View 1 (cartoon, rainbow, N blue to C red):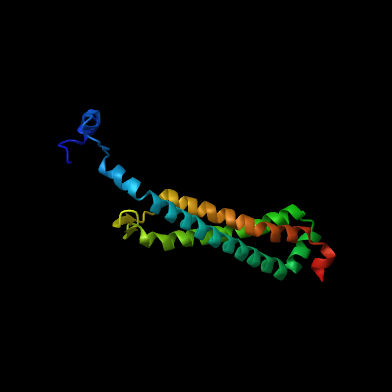
View 2 (cartoon, rainbow, N blue to C red):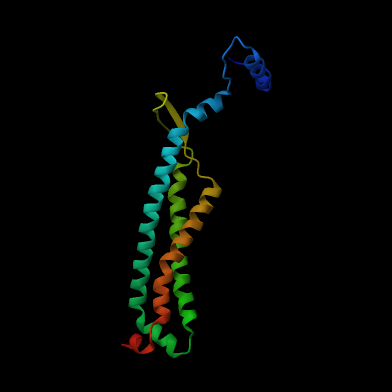
Length: 176
């Protein structure tokens, strides 16, 4: 039923549920549709986390591969830095900073790619009621910030081991 005012809902619900002749389960329309789409929301959340996890692992491996290649191509530079008296932690910090910067640039590019889908509305079938559920993609500043932070974490994870290898490289081996 449609009420003249949404504020009357609690009173009407109380009256209907108090009547022993009626077996009524009163809900607001928004709560009803939210309960109908709970299973679909669970499935979509699982898929999003699963796919994001797989892509994050791939991104970390990509960062590891890129940074190992950077360390391998700069062994001469690493040797010069060590010979000049730079501490291994300075070398570790420089490679880790590079990995973090590359991850930041990648995260910002990812945010730019995500912006055009902001507000796009799509629909899917609700299999529990065989109705259509429409939802909109919302790219909020919070989501963009979380994406950039997530990319920075992946860059740090992917850059740490190559940076550690560069920092621990013996001068004699680096000169060769």
